[in-house]
Image (tube, rainbow, N blue to C red; front, side):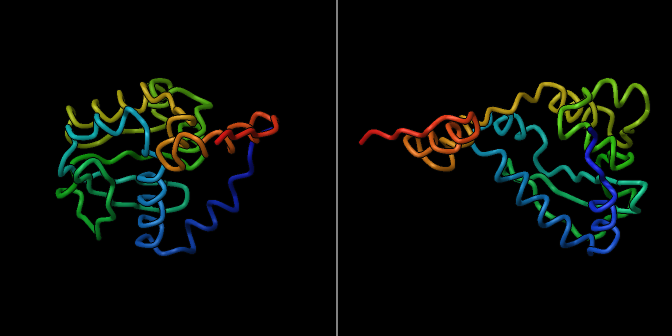
Length: 162
């Protein structure tokens, strides 16, 4: 059963872009902890990335610095390096790994505009993303405590030995 995206779309319409961008950059940076993809972001140092969600009239501007995503104020089309544009449902499919990036881009459900090399690099990063929850929990909680959320998630009783 697909997740109803109307509440999320409404939230995007009603919340200022600066707040959305700040929250998403913090979430993204948190989720990067422990992931191998974090080391591959160095190639995007200083790049300005825009995400445009067409059906909610949302434009989010980010800058990549020191392997982290930061909120950027309003940036004109000529000042951003790459813009990824599409409908909320397609960004959701990408984030939830319900559809692979190649399919979304080749079917023009998501579009990349701007520097070709940077856009292709970002698309390939998205395509190669294999999120490692165990590595994330270890980076955030430490090796011993990381067992707790994984055990709960897998429906097991957590055991931590001292």
